[in-house]
Length: 189
Image: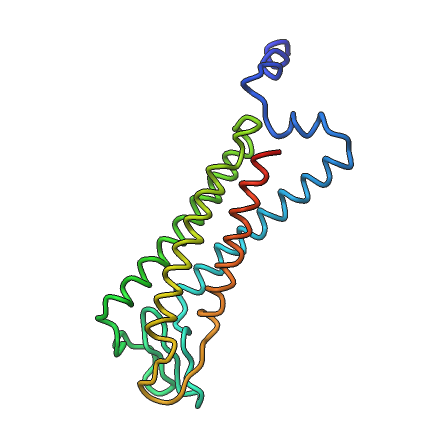
């Protein structure tokens, strides 16, 4: 028991729970709600990034005959095929690469956040998580911007409009920026 007591008094072992125990109860509740909310939004962003990158619904044909994504062309008659009319273009490969990088950076940021939550000292807390999430934000920005510039007016076939994958990507863009900034702000507290 004395070994545990001496361990918890070591200034290098200062953790979130020790910090929270020194706060008044209403501040503890606010801090825990804030941390839980950021964690939930981060998880939702990771899931939406996976869905938007994997699903083949970046463009939907107005007549309901199919959709086009980053990986496949899906029609109601032939199913999904790998034959994208613009599949060999470097711009599409860049979009694919940046969307995959955004998923990787978002997952890394989430793991780093959980790690830092329990191990880092006060003052250094969420800087690395915020920087990694802002890299995710930058990858989403570049990938979605390239897609918007090159393929938003995709006119090969019937008239089309943006699908839910495209919209989810821009929602993830907003969430990743907010989360990244919140991590950096929380670092200062």
